[in-house]
Each structure stands twice: as structure tokens, then as C-alpha cells.
Length: 490
Image (tube, rainbow, N blue to C red; front, side):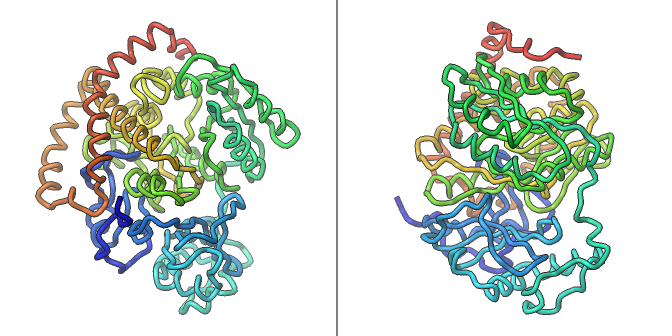
């Protein structure tokens, strides 16, 4: 296989991925099922996960990390992970006073980056975002050169008004479904131990309880974390999440996958939007933990979970995304199940996550993103909150990548089948989308550099074609196993 993913003629200009508007359908389906940036995407070289495409012009390992601008410049790896010295280049999330400003690309490994190199890269790629933050919050003097970034942009005596989430006093349970991954589970729980939040509890739902590994891992954290182990032998990620909701006694329920590392401020920012009573669900920003293998780079380029560094709100009224195809039924545009939160009462009222969707069901995926759609259709708001950062470990295995893309294709068309057959409003959304689809086709939006390689596109397309049949099978399967009885609808 070639060592080049996309043509080397991609633009290097404006490499950072900062704030921008306008989305369109690409030829590929992915975690957001085809949504990437359209205008700026083509000019600025962005992946479907809103990362600089330069890191994907090659298949050599790329380091990932973050850079805080409120102190002396030093690039860090998430969760204290190491082993980036063999990488060819680096992607860094740049953050100032808890606000992600951009994702920047450096042409060298993270361990070789000097403070001067970091300052020059930030200034070249996102000086506008840095200055805009300082102007908006009045927290620091606006820098006029890269050198002024070196000591850090320390907030004034009163601090930065936007640096702290307004989420004190709310009760939160973090639910982590797990299925035979004790190492990943332990790593995730270690990062939860460092979470800066007044009080929360954790429920680990073991979807493969015949083996003792998950129980043992949870027990090892009992003295550091308010964590409980719950066995749920009934199959499916939706069932595991619904069991977590049933076990929770809190106002809000947050969900993290067992293969993520959460930022210390993750939970506070994830639940911060719920200060608005109209908000029913929130999704966080999910960045790649590592990009070491070809499979990880292809997954991130075509199916990355991030939706960018700009907070967005969605509903059926003033925050209706009229430029989105099939809005709001294309749920992947809002976020992903690896980092999300809901009002518990809302989930109970809706009957939880659909057990006929999601990993472990015949429909394979889609339950998490469909829950965002359901929240909007029930009259609520969904917020994408990029300040709630976590890092996801993508699969390193080529066969697993193909299975994942097939599963995403199945889940995508399964969700659309559900609404086509159960919601009369879907046809109206389809009719509204046709002019958008034709306009995008005329503009050539599907010919950008992040189209899937032909072999992987076939796998995904086959999944899409299989989705309607598999969803029908999955509904019968869920009824037979009485999976809707995991939580009581209220």
C-alpha cells in the first residue's frame, strides 16, 4: 500500500483548525457520518475530525498532545503518556485559560520542540485566536509577537472570566460501559481520579461479567474514587448504558468509553451547559490519543470524532442548523458516545438508549448519536462543548478498522430507517435536504482530499446497504430478549 494518503499538493496555508462555520456532506460516512467543513475545509486542509490535514499526508507516526498558553510553553502528552520520540511530526491542541483555540501542526516530534519553536508555531497558525480570546475576556494583554508567548499569558488579578465552569452543586454520575478491556478501563479510571470536580460518582457497567478482570480493576480504585461495579450480562452497549442510568441517583449522567483518557477539567465543562434548563444533552471534544499506525491515521482522517474547537448549540428553533443535511436526524454531527452527558430524567422519559441500536446489537452502532437526535426532536437543546476534552485510543488493527467502518455504515442507515418508519417529520427533513445535496454536488464537495480509499469506501457502503435489514433484525432481537426493560420509562 502506498505510503501517501492524500496528494502532497495540499495547501499548507492556515494550518491550524480554529473557529469556522459551514458544513457539507462528503462522500464518506464516519463518526459524524460524512460531515466535514466545506469551504474552509477545502482551502485550509482539514480532516473530517477538524484536524490539520498535513499530519495525514504520510503514514509515519504522528504525536498528539496539548499546549497550555497560560504558563511557560511546554508540549504535553495526554494522561502523561510517553513514547512519542519515534514520531515524525506533532498535532497539538492549543489552549488558553481552559479554552481550546486551535489544533496546530508541527513538523517535528513533540519531544524535540523547544519553547521558541512552540511559540513560533502558535503565532504562525493561531495568533488571531489568541488575541481574540484576550480581547473577549480582557484577561491578559494582547501579545504582539511570538516572544511574548514564551513566559505564558497569565490572567490578571481577577483571573479569566471564562476559565471556570458554572456547574457547582449539581449531582453527576459517570457511567463507563466496558467489555473485556481491563487495561483500558484501568487507564480511564486513573484519569478520572484526577478530575477537578467537587463531587461525582462512577458506575462501571461490565457487559462481559463472566470474567473477573473488570471487577478486579474497579476494586483497585475503591480507595481513590467513588466507584461501583455493576454486572450487566444482557448484550449491547445501549443495555450497558441504560443499566448505568438505572443505577444512578444523580441529576445528570455523563458517559465515557473505557478506551478514553479524560482531561482533569472534562467533567466540569461537560456538565456546564446544563445551567441552561433547555439543554438536554451535551457532547465533548474527542481527540486522538495516538496516531501511530496506518489504521489509526486513516480512522482519524476519515472518521474523527472531534467537531472542532467552537461551541455549538442545536435545537428545532433559533439554533436550527439549516445548512445540515437531514437535520436533526444525522446525529453524528452533534458528537459521539465516548464523551457525552444527559439529564437523567430526560433519559428515563425517553426510555434510555435504543437497545436495537449500538455496539453488540445486530445494528452495530448509532445508539449514542441517535440519542442526541431524540433529545432535539423532543424539544430540547444539544450542545457541543469543546472545552470538555478527552482522548480516544483508535484501533491499531486494519481488520478492526474495516469492521468499524462497516459498523458505522450499518448504524447510520439503521438510524435513518428507524425515523423513516416511525417519524413523519423525517420526510420533511429529507425534502429540505435535497436542494442542499444538489448544491453540494455542484460545488464538488465530495471530491475533497478526505474521501475514503476505494477499498474502505466499499466496506462502509456495504454497511449502509445492510443497515435497514439489520435494524429490522435488531428490533426483533431486542424484543425477544426484553432489552427495553432495563430501565423504566417515566
